[in-house]
Amino acid sequence: MGFKGFFEGGIASIVAGCSTHPLDLIKVRMQLQGEAPAPAFQTLRPALAFHTTAAHVHPHISLPPPPPRLGPVAVGLRIIQQDGVAALFSGVSATVLRQTLYSTTRMGLYDILKQKWTDPNSNNMPLMRKITAGLIAGGIGAAVGNPADVAMVRMQADGRLPLAQRRNYKSVVDAISQMAKSEGVASLWRGSSLTVNRAMLVTASQLASYDQFKEIILEKHLMQDGLGTHVTASFAAGFVAAVASNPVDVIKTRVMNMKVEAGMVPPYSGAMDCAMKTIKAEGPMSLYKGFIPTISRQGPFTVVLFVTLEQPWSSIVINGTFS
Image (cartoon, rainbow, N blue to C red; front, side, top):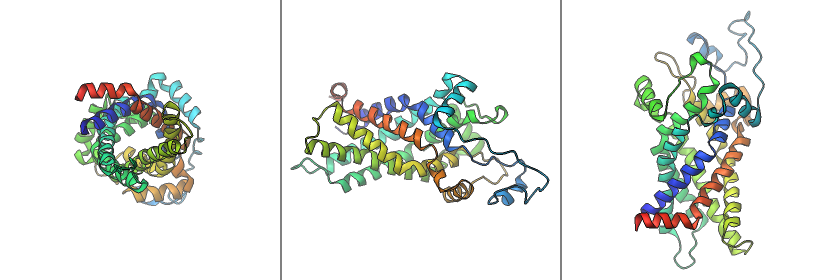
């Protein structure tokens, strides 16, 4: 019975992740918009860390104006124009590995805790227990899947770099291998605290709110237990998850994507440093960069995830496999 939750959750997550990968790619590109590029000389970094202009360091150098901020449609069109339609699926192999490791773990653990903590008399689980189960399952799942998460972010962000600076990973295996060789094995868990925090927020808000919305709809007899209920509850859960996780997701993307070279001070010393520099340079609402593609992706992702998970045919397949 325990393996059923892992297998069902993993398959549903892979289907959802691949279906919404282009939206995730656009979200990552938007989250990196406005990020200050690494300076050409390391000696400039301390002086530039918290100054809004470079005039304090080189008064005779005038920097070009920042490029205009693009919306999700414009970002998508630019990707297609520059690199072709296939570029919208850059890093999809990392998405498959990430969902296999991260989502399989979190969905399976949540299912186990849900079965254990559900009241046998009412067949319901209190909201706080749902949230707690989501926090635990999400945190463990994120720790397991962090290497694939780092690889996915880098592969998705690679196309925004000049050709000479691109990492040009061939696949998720190549990305993980190159990172381990050039930056050390520890680099595979770069931003892991952010990944864990984000995953705890997403899992608790997504899975717990889906169950809660579904229970409310059925208890108040607003709909029958069917496709309409599953779509409504899952889209509402996706919106809650997007609002809760977007700030952490922006910081996670930037920390994971930063380029760290031997002998050079990294652009960010950690999550808090990244958050403070981002807010100081771009304002508090910069933490909600990419929110439109986030909700555009999180909504369909959650719908595909739970609709796939709730379909009778999936239970038949799983029961046949594990019977």
